[in-house]
Length: 40
Image (cartoon, rainbow, N blue to C red; front, side):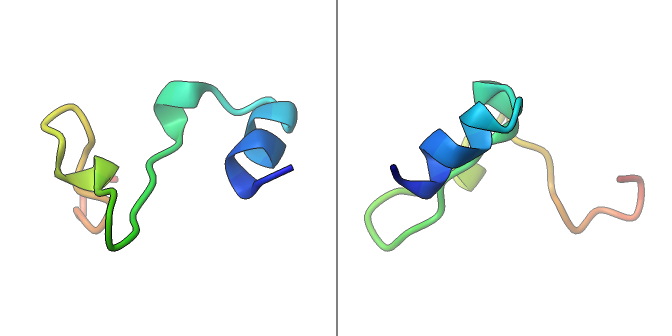
């Protein structure tokens, strides 16, 4: 089981999980908010 599977099993929705690696950057997608924004 990888971390994403564990998070999904812990009742997080797939839309609440963003992957950031050298190959994958879900955070760059426009629907993902700026996690460091003061409004969050």
